[in-house]
Image (cartoon, rainbow, N blue to C red):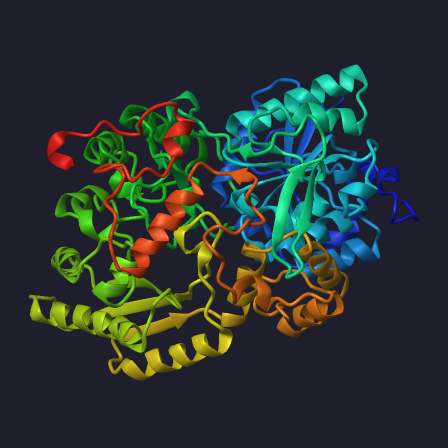
Length: 632
């Protein structure tokens, strides 16, 4: 076994497997680390031209729920000479054992140390996972910073929604993928394969990769700052780097068949079911929602492809629950046909259907009937705000009458529990809006008892309240975040407004939201803070038992950086942002217009009814929708 933790490349896959015989005896849930799951892909390493390690910076159970990994895993492994394998962040007991026994982080499929791969890809799904990425690199014996890695190390790349402002993590990655990865990641792998054959060094390879649409090479850009700490400019320092990186998209979703061979996890994943992405993007334009902006334009899969892929997936995995996933599944223009096609085989195959992203304003009895033929699942609706005024501010085009109609349908169909999602700390919010959250829940309770209901059965209304975090590429990116003390006072006030045992209140820790806000809108200077917090013991920050707010405050202080600068300061409409060189499709002019409309509590029509001129249509090369005269 190797004695030098700095060079894990001295251990091979056989030695890792031998070491695991001892290590796995000392940890809980060893099945997290064994591999060998049904549908996992095993290839001959000696015949591979490109080896790719897909790394999810959280536990196995969470990572195995991530649809993006399933899509890319199956897509890359269709290439005979490429092998995509998986690695996850080990839980604390396994991490300690690996460090004690000098076992580097490895992939589940072949037990090969990550340091021996051509490419290591991380998904940046959530800002509080950043320290886990550094922990996984450290466990692999790989230098944390890109500038410390020459061509003898794997290429470290990142994708995912947080790349829309990749700057806090820019120092740690060689390559970042802005946008959708189906074609972009294949192009990267093809370039790496060609680069290996040509004998390119790292600099030459990065210059080659910079020409791929959506690829961002952080080291090819210099950032300058104004005396007050704001960004002055972000400019390329390499002739191969474009002034702006425009995100990559899949114009026609039907050109990529959804995955049909999910790996069936050894232990229960958080979302352990079959799922098919039915559409991408969103027509709604909620001003707080980053996903609704960065995944524009709206694109649908055809009903036949959805049904055929879903049936193959259920038969290939044995799952008896199918989820139709998207940001807003009930906005699919042919949803009734989709459900009819699914029900043509699902009931006979004893497969239940669920639509996890239903909208209050297009929920119907038909949807209930077509998704409860096998079993009923819970109903969750996002009201987001407690008063109509604030719902107009955030462009959540939902009224109490629509909430009432939806809950009436649900209760008459036998449902006795409803979950409502809200946010707290929204722009222009007052205590009256907070009270409105409790009032809305109470009106739902009263509605239940005003209708005929089963004798002896009560209702349960759960309100889940998240702390609002302003995110890049949204109209609310210009807003300051509510201070932690203010959020705590609002949480206390909300609890005081709830007077029924039929209403359960869940709310989020404001400390994690503060840190999320800092890194969401932060710049490259925060890389030092992330690294220092990690070196001082920060990892698994998404887990309450390991999150230490004081440790982060100490890291900010040691680096001479004030976190309040990033999330408690309004951004001017014409300010250069840390993400100004990363183009996700929506224009800054559109975001500014929407922000000003929000302050006037004016709403904007959904995209499929009227174009709001966001700019995302340029990614398609034409209009996103064909509008009928009666819709405009």
